[in-house]
Image (cartoon, rainbow, N blue to C red):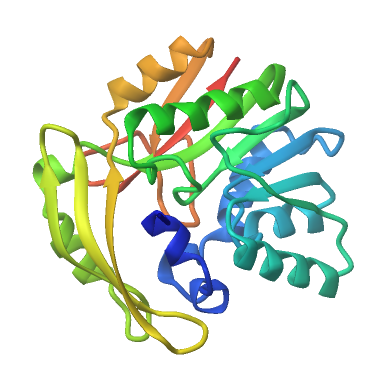
Length: 253
């Protein structure tokens, strides 16, 4: 049986690119460049690359990027966009829980819930972190975002989604946050690229900063910075607060 995140991205590339939460690409890539000292010789893997927005922008800036995703439809869109721009990006279909790479990359990025936190069990989410780590060279760096477990303790997730909703975009309803599992169960309503209206029952895992630190230390990271993720404006000056919906993690081996 297909999981909700597989069904969601079956035919949802053009509409996905219009979503509010994917409009911060330039600022996010500025942050990534700064983190690797603009070293163009470094190899980057973009995990859960979707329609390729970060891969394409980084490639435009002269970096060698491999983009991986589970969705054929999202990858087809990414390839088409890259071809149009004459960019050579290695887009491949892989499951982030089982990547074939070992110590190949200097940097791994996984932004906008690129797989991690969407999985149905904590073990599967951990497999994604493990596989990203395995793909990194010895002194590699890992930059990713995930849902902030502190946010639902102080705010309504339902109200947040309602305030961020925009005409024509996907909408979340029936949100219920489970304190025992730190999972938000909700129904996402959206229209796919063929104009077909769909409803999917989703559940996403929110992470507390201490959990992330513990998981990453288990994987051998020495330096772990937990920051607030501001859309399109990632910054080391933004320490995480209870008002941040997303966490930005920068981990170094």
